[in-house]
Image 1 (cartoon, rainbow, N blue to C red):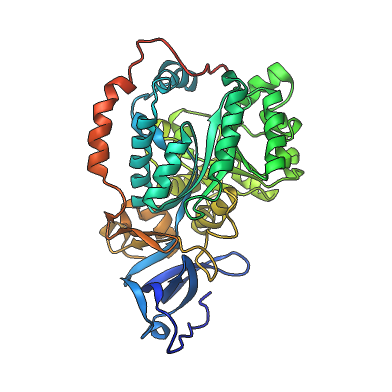
Image 2: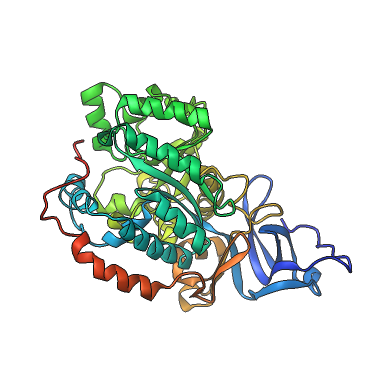
Amino acid sequence: MVSDSPTASPNASPADLLITGCTVLVHDDQERIAFEQDAAIVVRDGLVESVTSVADAVGLAAVERVDARGQIALPGLINCHTHAPMVALRGLAEDLPTEEWFNDVVWPVESNLTEKDVELGARLACAELIRAGVTCFADHYFSMDTVAAVVAECGIRAHLGEAYFSSQGPQGREKSLEFALRHRGTADGRITTALAPHAPYTVTDADLAATAQLALEHGLPVHIHAAENRDQTDTSLSRHGITPIEVLDRAGLLATDLLIAHGTGIIDRDLPVLERASGRTAVAIAPRGYLKFAWPDTTPIRALRAIGIPVGLATDGAASNNSLDVWESMALTSLVQKSVEGDPRWLTSRQALHHATLQSARAVGLGDSIGCIAPGRRADIVLVDLTGPHTQPVHDLAATLVHSARSSDVRTTIVDGRVLMRDRELLTLDVPAVVRELEDRLPTLVDRSHGRRIQEYDT
């Protein structure tokens, strides 16, 4: 709710940023969504100092001001699972089953990746994310030192993990650990890190167990693909007699802070396993890709929430999802859940906004610092313009935000109190220059004539 009015003594230093005239999405003490009109947000030292009324903010000194009259202030969206540099492969592998997508296109092309390709992909991805109102993303990919450098430069927040397969040998796991330790807390605290084994079908039980031990020893979370689809679960049951979730449990990973990507193959027998996990377990959902691959199931959000598992919103990589638009993921999540549950009352617009904000923050381990606009939280804020014909009239603001608004309605994106996009103008990235350089590199990047692939999909 709106805080007490800010108190400014005559000698008080100016606020770093003052946003005025907006309607602010807030959470009450029961985590219910509400909207405060005619509000002002005071930002100091990268934190929200107060959320007050426009009247009470009159005369408050500030280094930078944003007039947000007629706009909605939301906590910055969080992309809880993606592969940012894969924007370079957007549209390359279309209309294919999962196995062919991996084996015939994506993994052969990824064998060509250079650090420069990753850098350019990361720059383009960060530009897309910022323009779509995403202030934090959880990335699981290769050459992550390069991605971390881009994050530090452009001002976004990120939760990064160096992916590895067991086929790389012990050095893959070691590189993942070294990256996580080296970059934890860098970029003025905007980068958090995780260990990033690829999946139970590409990482051995021994490596998974070793990862769990390393995570507990060093206080690191783990980010992994698991039970991505029902075929993987059925194959695991046939070959090993246990589900992918049970594989994670047997390896000790459910004792760590674990982020599971996708989970559309989670079945009823997995739920008590997840419920008794001693670590913080969360799941990231990216529904557009599941629809494209024609997977028969989706992430069972209702069942997971019933056992206290946070479910955050994601896009996966743009090679499968074609975009990094979490706004679209929010709408699709609500619609797909209504369809699979046969219940128009689930997920509601307010529930979808909760998943896009607090649930997503918890999923990436940042539930105490981002995910809502409140005193003491990091000032990760986006301003959304609802004056377009596609968002008028507004009868239900939550429904308008989820089902009518688009990512292109985001006018301003702020991370840690720093404005990264203002009135749709990116301030920290040069997209035309990135696109020109990337286009020059594409013929070499997408060449598959060598016959190599970085891994084999067999599940």
